[in-house]
Length: 301
Image 1 (spheres, rainbow, N blue to C red):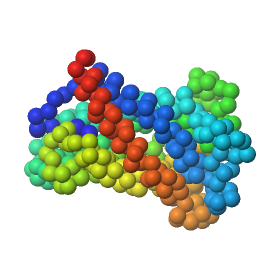
Image 2: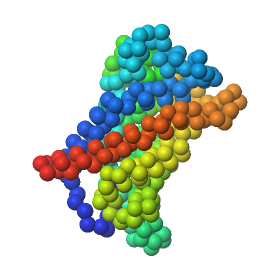
Image 3: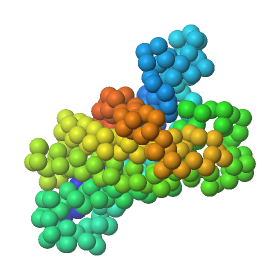
Image 4: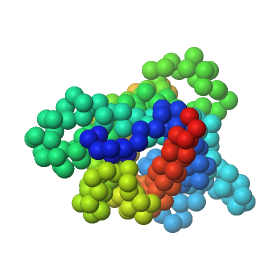
């Protein structure tokens, strides 16, 4: 997200980053939450998804309802999703540049002397993204509740966030934290690294902040598709851990073993197609909006 630290660029204030990225997260949520729900429900489906069963898999209890009710059924857990998505975007859009600067300050010389200025800069960019992704685990409770509302609403129906913590314990909301970190580390590395490689080699940019909208569009597509594909297998495992009932003690290893035996290796890529189909416009939308709003807010705060 941030340009290489050794180039001249304007640093917006932390407030501007929060306002810009937060607004981006809200807008992204309203537009793309239904598609995310569809992807999560496909990933959680343990049976064979045929044309005749897709209606029930995607719309669940609203499968036979009128079209407008079907559409509204794709917005479960919107409150949890809003909290998670806004916090995630603020953290990711605003946090990655700080990690990038921290790495450059403490290990930039090593990266550049070991890998060269260009490759070292891209690797710092990608590594900062990876660290940012690992840190997202602190937001896991909101992600868990969002996924449960999308795929297993009976587990949380009638209980607010604080009641869930009291009833189930904070530990249950961090179920799958190790798998989440294992998914986020390579996924975020590929996201920011793929974007950096595209801008560096395809568009010959040394200052990534000078990329045009079209260049950001292409770079975002490349990074996002790489990220989603790399993280897909562990994303399916993480989703199945999180959408189980709160008191379920099934481990990720058990889920992987059962998936291989019962569903085959292709099951690790369930839901990948809709995620890839939406990842382009979704990431371009949020990236472009954030990059436009952060400088705008930077004029005033």
